[in-house]
Image 1: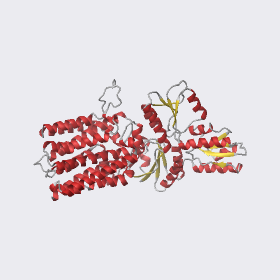
Image 2: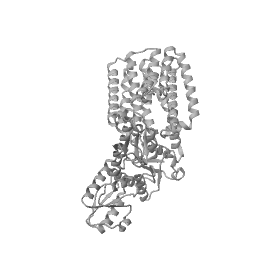
Image 3: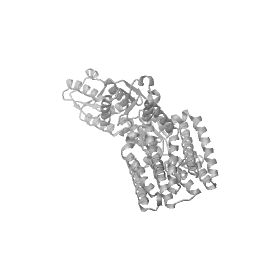
Image 4: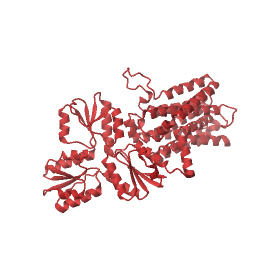
Length: 581
């Protein structure tokens, strides 16, 4: 099955704004933080926010202390005044487009106009709009409802920001039949209109459409209605577990879009599940094998072995991987075992927390016993191999394991009121610790046992650090808002996507210049040509960051394969160099 994902699927600007305001309030406040009703219409996100200290309440009666975040849908003037009169600090989380609609409703009401609101009667945004209409208003959802209204001479029409544009047109036409001078105010959010237009275009390319989002979300339901109106079979799901595999298996091309309050990790899980439906033929077997290798961390561990071989050649080792006269195969075994064990065990801990669903974490949860046994065996194997290579190697590996395996553990007791009780709590620590662990097993361990060329060691350290820092940060770029919701202060969360991407591009540029400089200067001796060839690796990362990262972000499997390809590229170049030199 081929899956086409809409470009504008997922969180809109208004939702991101509300989430950022709520999370900032929770992080900066020592008191309680509330939202009056769900911040956005997505139960999964609301539950996650509860764990972050943002409490959803239908009624704040009796609450006199703390902060109240006005949700993206807005509220009435009266409710806002009531909250402030009780001593609560009001944080404005209303979508800017909704705020504009409220200002227009108040302005035109002040001019003596009766306001017809096109929208869902019980929707929070519509209730808020009604509270800003001081000269009378009526809510209609369909054109037929207009006939029952008693309209004065001066009428204006305002739409719920997520309303269907074609329905608004029908309602406006019916109102103008009764009151030709009626004014239609453009209040439908452009992002909403673009999503609906995109669904229509998408439906022409696919056999069926899957709309992802909470069924309580008005804009999600609108997307499903628009998709269904095109005549294409439409499936509205809240997550991957809701997919009807039997029904969807009949289609070879499926389109995916999502409501404005749907997290990217939910969209990603749906895409992964859809790609796994219709399992037949050689293509599926290849994809399924790749999925197992990636999600079990075997692929990444093989990449570690490939990078380790490359670094060993830069250090001065001359052997091919399959030759047993030297310790290269032992170093590669240590690198493979370490990366598999640390990645698998940390993912098992993350899957146990159940904070969010991804295909990789779902795989870890399903194969917990096999991954645990495999990790224990490889841990023992790497310890045995390192012991035979000497005390320095063994101690370095032990230190790397300690840092890798305690990364997600609470190392400082809760009794001590320190914010950072885990290594993972330190802002932007994940990518730094990841790069350091890789550098230890791929460069420092071989160098500790048999110091080779110092210039080669410098190049190898720079290669391992930059490649793994970039590939680790690439994953963070795919879900900045998800990490923000979960309280993970990754580099993209701290710097923003644009600044982070620029930093990664600078680092790849530095690596490229260093490889060319060391190679052209001849300080690496007969390995100078290898350094020049390895310049292909930062060039690959640069091209991926510029062109490939955006379209691979929707698929965890695709993103992992392209990120790990940089490791195999290093190993492949080194192998070719060893064969021909």
